[in-house]
Length: 87
Image (cartoon, rainbow, N blue to C red):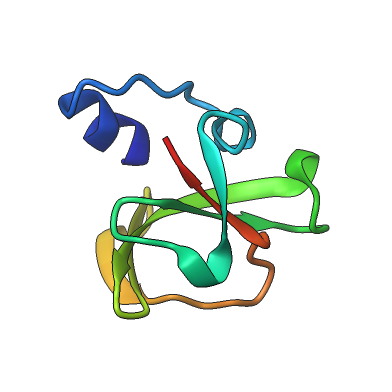
């Protein structure tokens, strides 16, 4: 979902969420702005990243997966990486 959304805006991201964590500027999570990417890791490291979502602002994000489709929901902070990425 994230990769396609950015592609529509002319920004090309690799398919892997682990690689996307290295594609752009890392921003402290508390300074995330709408459009920044949020990453979730099973062990707090880049190799452990298993999910990426787009920050919408005001504590909300948009993400998607095969089982749920695309959803807008509150950011959950369990297993979130300490930096957002601004592609």
